[in-house]
Image (cartoon, rainbow, N blue to C red):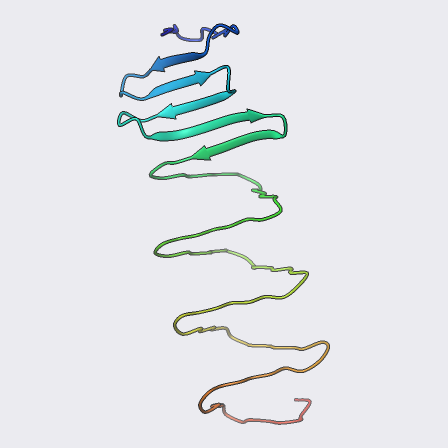
Length: 151
């Protein structure tokens, strides 16, 4: 096990298979030179950070209680697929506009009620029908309900 002084570089040779650095709170950093892996473990030996260097690029896994990302100007996530999953609640907030540009279809499956509230609601079908289907009544409640009207 190597110990480093502040601002000291760690140089690994081919003989160094695993290098372990212990931190004061019981966390440890393991550098596996042979498998090109870096692992940060908490004091219970659970993986908090895992980095693997491959010919295709990095593989990074992060497991933490909280993750805060702050960007003063812009935050960009670019990928073929992005999956976001929240077990209790997912909130999007914007002090300005929300713009969605989708090249194909949108499917929103809601287990409960889907409620949209705005000062004005506009639905436009630029090609084809605008369809509403219900297994019960379709209710329209407005000051006036106009059909086939330009107003």
